[in-house]
Length: 251
Length: 373
Image 1: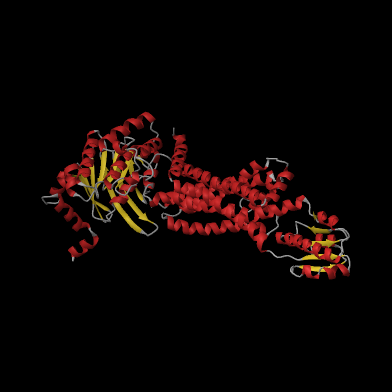
Image 2: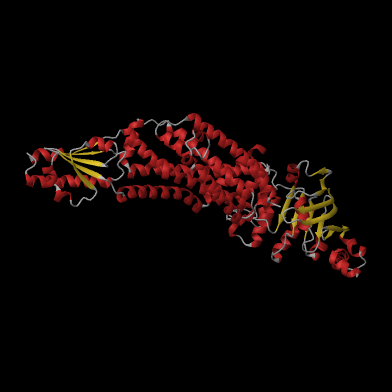
């Protein structure tokens, strides 16, 4: 179980308060979707969850343990994937899997077994000896996904994983997310595609202007806002909580 | 297993180097071609462009008069009657002395003072011209006796020759080897360290359960291997160049050192010292930026500082310089080549380099992670 309590992040360099107050709970074996407009602080929250950024204030716990106490053991258990992540272009998926598998302290046998399973699923086996830099965007994303999941993590954090991908690759990734859920993994998903949320997610968290404004089940999101669809619920939450919009509404 | 993180990074980074054929080629060819070309150029400049001041010493006025036509085409030769040619040469009053006796012409020169090869060639030619001129005037008693006795006597010692050679090597060529290493360190560090962020590969790396300092250590070890390799290619090319372009100096070195190879470990220690410092400086600068453009810009400033550091012996005669890495470069090169390498000084500089490297690594780890924000 992952708990986020009053998370805050201010970037000292440009003095931007990207996350002001986010509190969420994510249970084991569920798909949790993080929703929010552009610049709401979703990616910053995801990066703090992945140990890539240190929070300015607040606390993140994995199974009750603060992530700052033993960051390396948290890293062994999680995977983080965004559509921006790239791998070294000179290497083939085969070489990349061997390298990252070793960095994750896996045995050669574990690497071989997991690599074969993931490469077969994502259709990489045929291209496993080719340089990563020669791949198409979709193939690169599938390879990145396979490498990120190689160490069989308990928690998988996806930041807009299907952005810019064709429908076939999107579907393949969606199916794999459901497969991971079936295997009891915890999946945190950040996306703009509300249709994807309604199809995949069990629970949802909404962030507006760096603050969490909703955390609950997807099925209750619409009813809790007194509307019929999650699209309408999202817009309503945004209008009520977005600072400039709230001022206009108040006036 | 966790202890192998550094080893895995080293293997991966080295494989990356071998895969980038153009980078590897550039790494090895740059010092090779630069040193080879500059060595040749240096020899060319010295041989072809320098002027000189030489003197013809006659025994009497009769010889001087008879030589007027012959000496007309040699403006750098002045003419005197009498005098002490050997003294004048050793005191540097004249670059070389062409001495006309009754039976022969002697050419005195000091190779330590003499910097122009043209001087000796012209002196030789003038000697020939004087022979023919004096034959017509019947100054020489017997031409057969004269011709074989046009002797050239080098009054300098072999140590003097060696010093001249070493000054050239440790000066321009030594500095070029050093600058090649530093410039390679600059470009490789920004590509390897800052490049991870620019290529968006940093997140995948940092999220691994390997401490960042171990990943950085692995990377810097490979950087050091590459920089050391470029330095070694530079040194080997310098030796080969001097063997080809300055074979006389080279033979003297071999003769004087008697084939003793104890200079090799000292030279390696010196190269390691420069490698450690340049790696530390450029890795630290590179880790502080998230774009290679900015990293290269600031690394250029670091390059200027390092270059000034290597020129410290030019500004001061303080003995303490030999204990400091980079600053000791030219002094140590010279002493090593003379077979008088100061193990204590080079060893101390190496230990200081290791400390600088360790400090750079700690600072880089902090900066590398911080700039990810």
